[in-house]
Length: 220
Image 1 (cartoon, rainbow, N blue to C red):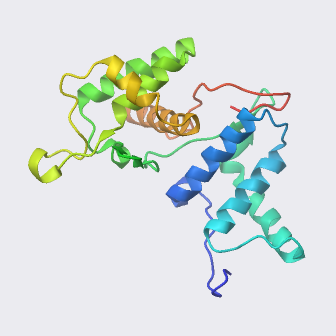
Image 2: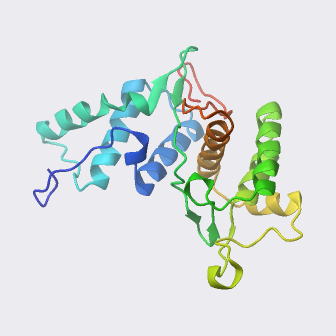
Image 3: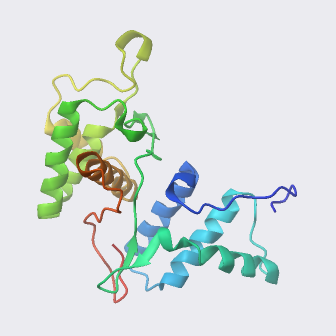
């Protein structure tokens, strides 16, 4: 129960994550990479469980044994989110077409399930993510994020939730995307990669997108 005595629902599948949950997961993943932390699967699941509980009103109590037991009980259910892959690397598994990053500052992203994406936007995005996966060059990732995230549009006047891509170039995408925080860019890429896989194959198995690893345990 939370501090108001209400029962909480701890997420058990991707569709139960909130925007705040996903932001915390991305922040945690990026902190591990930036600081080159050596963590175990238990470490990362425990910290994720702590964040999820905090988002639901359960605050840390350092002297409360029941709190630590609760964190552990919740963390062991997170095998759908964090896993150890076949190479012994920690992997953040992504499998949802719901866009949990609808806005970044003044930029607006695609609607969940790609509801407002045009065929041209999708086709160009597929090329950019393929180039990124083939080369690992961050410029392609920046361009993908800049393609998908644009300023909000007046829907009543234009019929679009985001500004149309009128006369924009890959360089324009790159400039806009380069201003997006690194950890958030990985979240955008993971969403688009899974969306592409699901759309083209009707396969809801998790997609593994390229992103660097660290240390002996590593992280994908």
